[in-house]
Image (cartoon, rainbow, N blue to C red; front, side, top):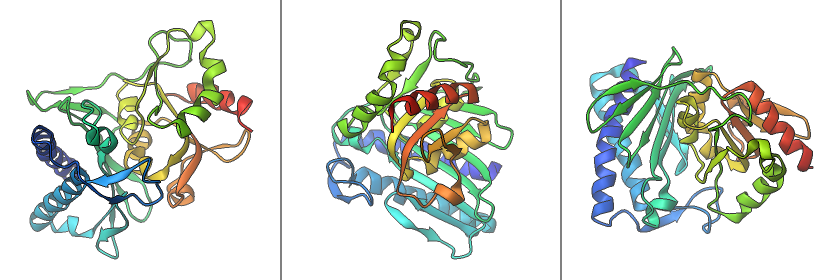
Length: 298
């Protein structure tokens, strides 16, 4: 496990500087093609995506040369659903090379991340997970003990994250993540949660207008309390999911009115999209949010 975390952190340190340099040089913004399962108006592959996943492949190859056990790794990301690596893997790695390529393309800083996790390829049990906040220069990581650490790249300091403590929507300071980048997602989100979140007792809730694979690290670290997303692409779930599994908070999939189940790699991992997704720091908060969705969404 420590070797995998070392690998992920090494990759992130290099990627951090690579993305900042590319941004400064105004490179990496050329459109290379579409993303499988997405409309081009929603998401495209751009140059910085390719730079990121090729860098990961290079760093992984370096570690494999010195650590033969990593030769049994298989890597999947949204630009390569077929995956790469050994045909009989022991380690499965799910990677979101750049979470925020839409923002990067449009020169919106402070919304660019990279997310990766590793799990046992046979049992799907999570091993480790890490997330890079590129512009903040922070790496969030979690291992088997469920403890979330944060490395500050500028100083090298490593701290332990505060646990999320919110158990009800009415708690002051609750922050929820919602993707506001496209009306096709925002409109059903508003229909599902507007009535609940507009109540006077919930006036203290702040909403952050960015979703994706990075939110799992932020919930695990106590930054966010919840994330609700209609029609969520599974590519946005897989790289961050191990954060929830290792830190111990629910990731729920709506399979019908009143029927919410924990996201499961075997059951949902090959889906293209999740009809409605609720992620929360506690089971109690998840229950409040799923009930709110069920009251409005047929």
